[in-house]
Amino acid sequence: MRGKDYIHPALATRKRRFALPVATFTFVAGAIGLGWTTMSGLPRLSPVQVADAQVKEDSAPADSRSGRLRASDPLASPVIDGVSLHNSVSRQAGEWGIRTCLDHVATLSDFLTVNRSYTALSQRGQSEPDGEAFSSTIAARDATGIDSLSTFISAPVGSGKCNSAYQTVAAFPGNCRAVREEHFPSFNEVIAFGDKVEAWKNQHDGYVFLLPVDGLACTAIKTQIVHQVPRS
Picture (cartoon, helix red, strand yellow):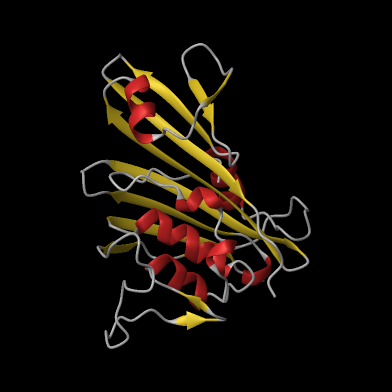
């Protein structure tokens, strides 16, 4: 079972009031929508399996992974290969036979769903689920009423390794400067990026893009690639 040292630092540095995490949207939608074969690298179309939309609400404390469900609870988290599956997204991946990237799927889906009501739609390749990409799109609402749309993708990259990328889009009231200072204080390195869109980077190579909307609101897009060492 992976220890906390395997969880990417960016997944642990979230703000409790609103954890706007971060699968580049266009890339993920294109790659998963087309069902490209990940391992071979060939632009060959393959069948894609789509899960029914799963509507859930995880309301346990965000800082208590082990305490979310009691062992006596009939909905206690199943464990596969030492990975605890706390939500419907990771459970779907486990049922589909995802193993190489299961810990990534579990960690990312936890990060995107804990303390939120959400609906998730997941996809995987049909020919060899554990050797191809897994993707999930999650529409969520946090305790403050802010809605977000997240997509992540996890794919094996050889030698037992798995890489993932995720992106979350949300709209905040107010100007983008105030939004960054309140919700993304660790993103303090400005990146030159167009005339209207602000781009900022943190020390974990995560990026947040801020698009002002008529000076009344700010659309934030947070994205990051998460790498993984081989499973032992």
